[in-house]
Length: 353
Figure 1 (cartoon, rainbow, N blue to C red):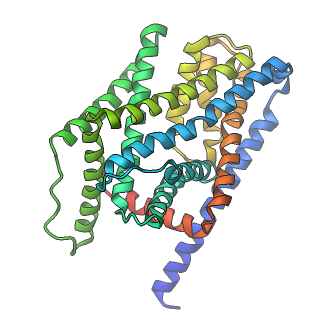
Figure 2: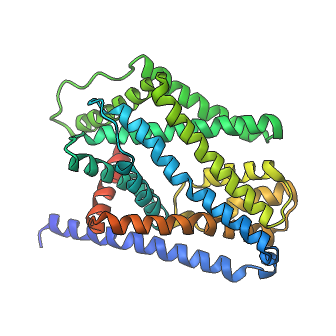
Figure 3: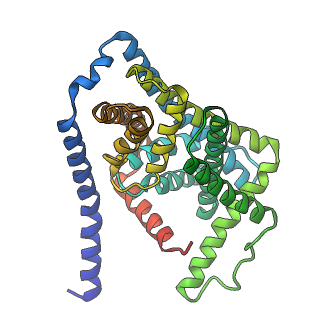
């Protein structure tokens, strides 16, 4: 067998086994958490009132998906140059499927999948769009969502009080976003290279600049209320829904701390989710949810871990159901979609920051 074919075969073997291995590790970690769980810590969930609160927590988190779709539709419409509106159905199903894949696979494959699906839907409606434009709109939506999170946490911290480390992290994120806004307004780094051919590094730089131009165009469009209001409003509403989800589950567990505890947990879980080491970040998610309860409120570790486990189930199960329905209705070849998403993600990972 030629050397190139052998390398391709080995790479295909690694690609096929890597998700299975990550899933197996995640299942093993979850089984270990469940096995060590003190079931008496779930006694507070034995009332109808508690289950109503659990239901509210699940519905509130599920509401983040249509809100994310509304936000992305606004940034995508601003990134396109034809001036036409983007129907919600173009982005809603890709958001559902992307969220599902982010849960069941490691490495944020779902982010690449939702971009590819949205672009395919645009092409089916005879709107030919460069992939970098769709990527740029998704990056813009994520950045605006991040700064909305920063603003909400800052407002909450002004009333509830937060640790100094949280304020430092918020300041760092705000500074990065401010730099992006200034760069977008002043058209920094927007001139394309002289040629698209030649060395691989030149092609990579050109792709990065294409994405940056789409991000910059999206940020400049934020000056228009017709873009900023729906994009910012949906992003803020999405974080408020997550905040309500955490608070409702705290009340279901009869854990004291109120909105301040919900804020600390949301911060910890959000930061943990930026490092998708395992499908659903099983283990790390529970640790992130439990840490503020143990260190700031003296909640017993067993109860805190049980809360983290139930929180992940409450936030995962509705997304899995909605994503599976969307995937079944989409009619796309899941294998082809995942392979395309992995290639897109791998190409993005090779790009220098």
